[in-house]
Length: 307
Image (cartoon, rainbow, N blue to C red; front, top):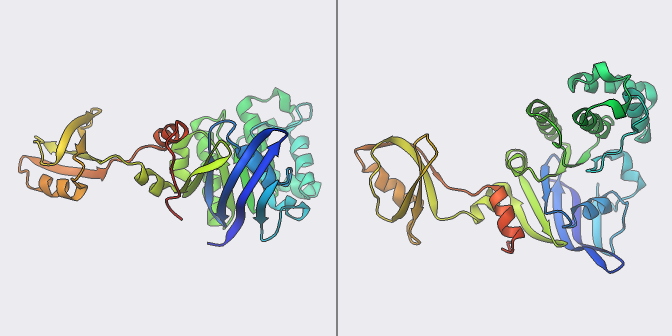
């Protein structure tokens, strides 16, 4: 995977406040990458250094093979958490103006916007003032503004805020389409289930430092307890090496907590010998990213666990 963005030991302070202490990570071309962390962790400052709004006090950033600058401006789309549409303009004029800031002539901007507005169910609202649109409509409009110039890198902060499940699916589809085209998306969100679904890799920043980095699967495996989930039919009897059996919901799934020296493979072989129980599903129990987030932010240090 070719590196589109390389952040190498960057730091940034404002007066006596250290916003970013030591952050390093890489993002590849065509990747959906998650930038995570609690409020005030340094995520937005890091993004603004990538956008060349701030200059690092220490460390380097390489974007498209060179330091961030004006030459990269039109190759990036940005959806900030603080939305920035012009509330007194009608929707179409606002989007055409914003597209012009990214180098699109008005005629080309209108042509491209036509398809996006139709896709996001805004085509019948183009003459309305932005301020008269619902919060969800404004969210979709700003997302379109970040996309209309077809950026190689899209950076989105809380892209799913105020969106219903239908529009959330639309945004996810766009991310997948961009990845298939070799275009990169960096998303910052607190909706961890969407990170699990969309991102291949993540980095978590806390108190200005990277505290967790790797593939989503490797991160979840790192924090996994010694337990398995089993679903099947029949009477499940006690198994050697299993210290607790905990029913999960009403679908027959049981969480088996294992003794320290017991492996999932040993439990699976023992299950196969039970004539009164038929295994339909067997998996290592992995924690959610929500659970990992709470553990790491609460004080449990982590390490890089995957490329």
